Length: 226
Image (cartoon, rainbow, N blue to C red; front, side, top):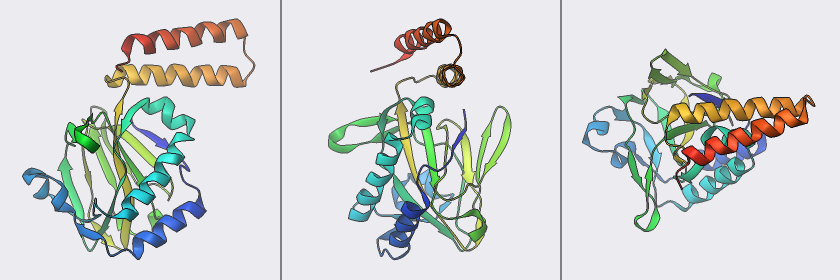
């Protein structure tokens, strides 16, 4: 499931993030953070993992996600790898690849990458190219969102970032281990949760809402891994 989540960050917060990123001297070659295969197709800059700014801005994004019910309904996060930041310019690109399946957190803890996320930090008309292109069984999906918006999609998807031929593209990216490993099961739960919310908002029959809510939680209980 691919899902566009609008306005994860408001305009003021985005402007603050952007100003700090554009004036930072902590950018390094993005190939330093991938294996040999990824390095062959990756050409961008990335905020170094040891930068205090990476931690500070990442915490702002994580706090915003905590307040976003749509994000939680879609992702059902168990673990989130703290956000990283990248910059594409001067033809910068990341060729087709699939994200690594297991990633390291702090103190030896590991995360299984079920969901990949990109949060756009500058407006799409400020640069040419730089689309996120995701390939799945339904075809090719091209994404280029307003600043502050987020796209989430399965980490198992083949995807790329097309070359930025003018201007610069700034974004945050991170991965999620979901409580529900199976993508189809996550989709079912999200669609059921969305339907329950709509019924509640339209003052539908309360007994039916309670019954559907029970079904949702029983399915989550069945499929969740803790």
